[in-house]
Image 1 (tube, rainbow, N blue to C red):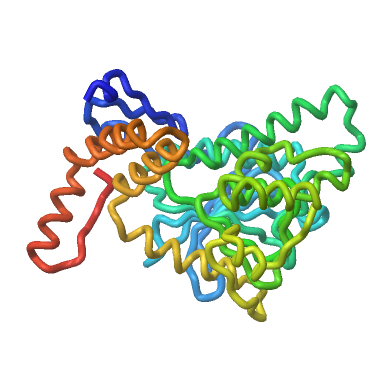
Image 2: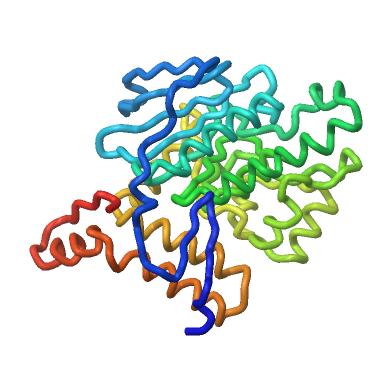
Length: 323
């Protein structure tokens, strides 16, 4: 098709062209110890689950690689209890580094974004830090926060945000950058910036309408309304709502269960499906179909595709390797 000529689809720093190839999936794992960074790898048990944990910098962001039957799932845990996980310069920097490392790691099948602080997902921007900023600093900081949301949204693998507590302002914008949101019924969420005489500046005015529709997004932003988990589910803002448990991590547990459904599928196919959907939804149908064709071309020469056919023939679970 002429529409395929010179077609380039970009996401998470990856380029897909009409010529089928899969070499870029063979990139080595990154997430290494760098100068000036504390990196500790341990294996421990939490809630009966084994995971390896990488602790970086001031530990405001915990990066965990789950193990066993949950291998392939990476958990990004925000950990700023003194500030209700508010988005600071330091947190933005830590998250950008983590996301940059994850996007080229073909061993990662699904990423879960959660809070390590009970009762809150993210309270939005760190207003105490913001109050100390010179007006000339505010714009660049918001631009960097917006870049973080874009980088997270463009991760090539599926992403899930687990909301076990309040996700307000920039916190909800961060969750909106994920592919799927799961919330506890007691969670609170809303884009409340107009209360501060500002507007959502990290993607909220663009992503919320794409999720719930233009009119409803306008109503929610204009009113700075805060919804609970059930209300969010009723308008399609979140995909799943669960009753909170005694541990306060019901949404996270549901996110892990959902992620386990994803990791058993062909990893290259999952990435290509996400790419086709994300790019195709922004264009007309004809161009979207051309994008789908280009993405489909990437899975044809893979070993995983042949393994899937062989497993079907032999009536056994496939053993996909991301090749």
